[in-house]
Each structure stands twice: as C-alpha cells, then as structure tokens.
Length: 172
Image (tube, rainbow, N blue to C red; front, side, top):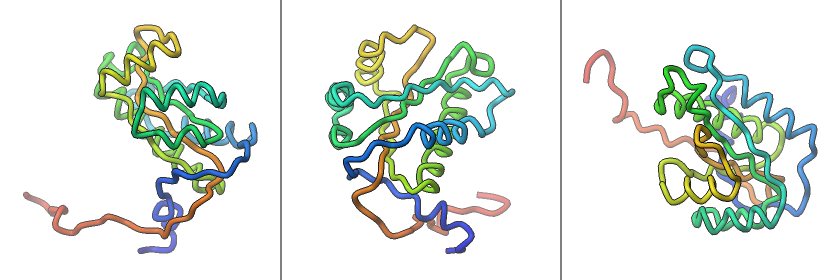
C-alpha cells in the first residue's frame, strides 16, 4: 500500500469510544470537509444533523439495531438529503452526493485523530420512518445514514480490500 495514501488505508470503522466530548471546533472542521465534495450540478443536497444527546442516541440505537454501540459514543452526525435540492430531484443523484459527503466525513474524522463508523438508514423503510418521526423531518428530507464518532478506544491496522479479479481494463 502506498504510504501517501495512509490517510485512506488507516480509516477503519471504530465502534468503541473514549468517554470524551468532541470539541466544537473539530465538529465544524468535519462539517466543512463534508461540504467539500462534488455534487451533481452543484446542488449540494446534503443536510447535517449533529446529535450529542445521549438519550437521543439511545433512541436511535433502537431504530438502528446494528448501531447498538452508538449508546457509548459521544456523538453522531446524521446525513440527510434534501430531495428537492438534488439534481432533477433524483434520489440517485442525492444518494451519490450524500455518500461522497459521508466519505469525506469519515476521512476527516480519521485525519483529526477521531474514530467513526457509518451506520446506514436509507433504504430501510423502518429506519427511515423511525428517524423521520424521532426528528420530525419534513417530507423532502430523507435520512441517509449516521456517522457515529468520537475519540477511539480501539485501534485497527491499516488495510485495503482490493481484489485484482474485480478490475477490468478496456472491456469486461
């Protein structure tokens, strides 16, 4: 693995966190990085919901059962998409734009010495409905995923899951 890309290879899903609040300045840095991605026709359909309340994280863990570890995390940044702002109001463009933003969040977290894990919401209708109800989201706002984050209480070795058999050159 190319050492210049360590900031990518060392980004791993972290599910154990120290009992330490993430500073507001770092949260702003992460959000700025989240908005530094390309977007179809520069429509920027991403919206962010910053959640630090432990009771809210507890409620979310019941809506998102694979994210039970979020009850021990200091915070989550939820990625929401505004379908009315997406290029041609397309769900596909909105999801692509928001996914690029999520990846920047994950890379920024890693670069800032934090850890995080992407927990999917969309397209699971029961999760979308639960989050929509919990936060009283308007109809045009679609919950995409939550990035649970904080100071890591675990470390993992850098890695890639590259598989040369999945790469094709010039033709299939």
